[in-house]
Amino acid sequence: NAGVTQTPKFRVLKTGQSMTLLCAQDMNHEYMYWYRQDPGMGLRLIHYSVGEGTTAKGEVPDGYNVSRLKKQNFLLGLESAAPSQTSVYFCASSGNRDRGPLGNQPQHFGDGTRLSIL
Amino acid sequence: AQSVAQPEDQVNVAEGNPLTVKCTYSVSGNPYLFWYVQYPNRGLQFLLKYITGDNLVKGSYGFEAEFNKSQTSFHLKKPSALVSDSALYFCAVRDPFEGGGNKLTFGTGTQLKVEL
Image (tube, rainbow over all chains, first blue to last red; front, top):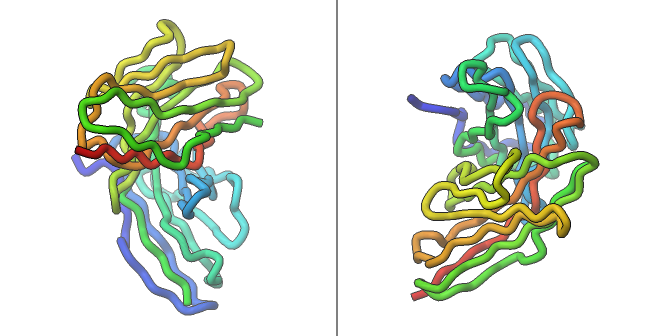
């Protein structure tokens, strides 16, 4: 049982380049999330999804796009990378309908993608 | 809007002593509260949660937290700290009436350092 898997683990980009971060979960979770973690700022929600084919904006969505074409996958895209997007990105998932009320269940996190933009 | 405050950037404690990591919250309704731990170069790991019921919640690795509605606090505690408890701890809150998706608001984190 792998839980939440993020690909890649590390990446260095040049300003203006694009890339896609992949998140996969094998827990049959309904909800998925993308966060960024910056020193002294905790985790901030970028985008999230409440089900296959749905996405919604979080606290800091500008410069990012997401897609959830399959229930188990949640992709985060950077169309034109900027140095301000240098961060550690975490994917999380929650909410298995076989485990009781979705609202009571904690989020499960991947180990992050460390992204540097030069 | 919901918010969380962790007033201490770092907490130092000697091994074997009790530890407390503080958290206060603000929500419009009754809160759902969570504690997570993060070890270096890893993702966040769930420790415990308060949804309803008994104000004292027990979680993983001997940790517990006490929900105090009047003080809007949810402090993390452990009776006897271990060096291996040294990590970054995050408190998070969810307002169950603020939309769907189980969105959490995280505090800025408290670095716990347990020394011999």
